[in-house]
Length: 122
Picture 1: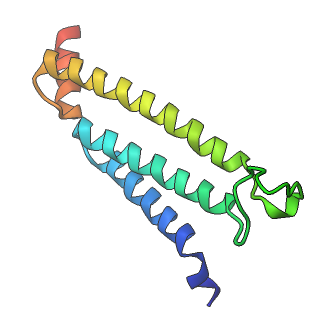
Picture 2: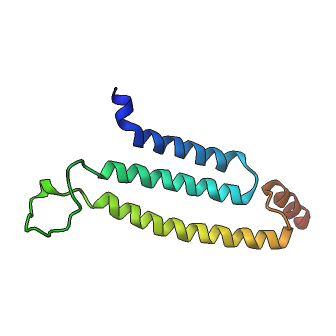
Picture 3: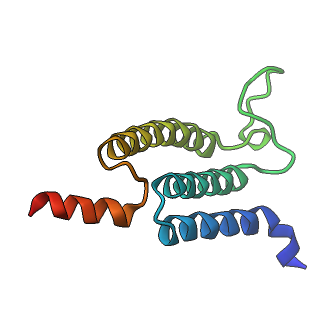
């Protein structure tokens, strides 16, 4: 029954595959951005699960307990927070570039944008 005790890791892997498939198989730029965000979320879930230890608390010294065995490792939480900030910035950049592409080519289909761009080159 080890398989059922790892359901957060399994959910993270399934989310990653869904996001990757969305990124790979859709031509719509907005759907690609959504797939990228699903992949990001799955990585954050995985890091959060791996950083948590059952029975321990956040590393904030309140009761005078300074023993390391009482607290979880704060590094995965810091990585998740940093990743979220970077992800929001990258998503904003991708959305702004998508707006520029839509304004120029009047479509969000990546294949159509490439066809129009090749016509402009020639």
